[in-house]
Image (cartoon, rainbow, N blue to C red; front, side, top):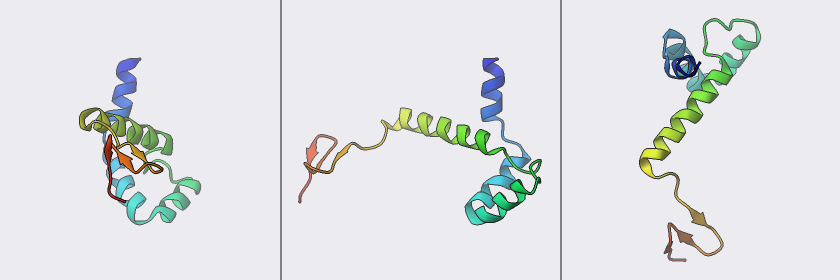
Length: 83
């Protein structure tokens, strides 16, 4: 079951390459076509969401994560910033 989960997240096929450009440049058209039932062409929204979250966690694991910002004290990553 774990292998199927990883395969489902990491498997990139032709639908991915049709979905990503349309998501970036024509999100309204992508949404309209998906609602009209032309779903076989595109990656399902939940699978795309899970892939994005999984990728974000992998990137943060290797880069140390997002910077910590305290807007009140003007402190970023433990170093005081100039006002």
